[in-house]
Length: 284
Image (cartoon, rainbow, N blue to C red; front, top):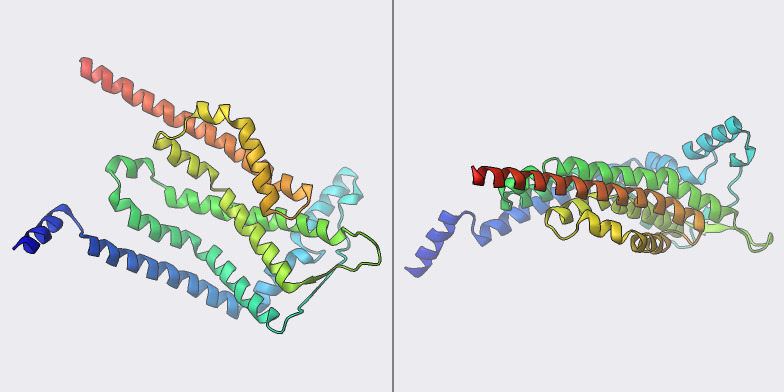
């Protein structure tokens, strides 16, 4: 009798705990399936994924290098033209090429499937939010996906080629040849792209923290100098050990931090207006 009563209360109150677990299981299955589908497609399209995407930044005809050369010719600075990348990529392990084929396919699959993956996560979370919270977070899937893909593109077209160019031309002595292992090359490229994509989520994090009242625009301003130091440290950790790469990832993050301050200000202004309207209606 007691079990039936508990069951009836759960049904009246909404989904039971087991129902939530079942819903979560299906969301996870669909998310994993999407990643696997894109991974398989990337694995099959080996010539494009490796020949164009993965190995693209290692070639002097890469889009970024051509744009830099055109810019150098326009402003009269021919040094911006990158005519040589003095390194070779080799595989020193028997399973090196196959394992990197799998790894790169998984990374491409994850990036391509991320918008749908986050959509599934949001579908699971949003029913548990109040209507006010859902309205405030409207467009979350679009903005999170847009920032993630923008960060990935920034990491691929800006951060990665600049890092590769610096490391390829860095030599302790002319007698030392740069022969990079395929594992090191793919791991570095993947880390730079994914780290950049994650770091670009800063405005979203600030938005939700500001909504919950955990941070304010005044707090973000007061800790601006501290945030610069933290961003530079994080940039140094996730990028190769060269100043150029660190600054390249730090600068857009600092801009996004300032955007986060503007977002917090706007939310505070909206809350103040709603509070004023509420007080006015209450007095009336």
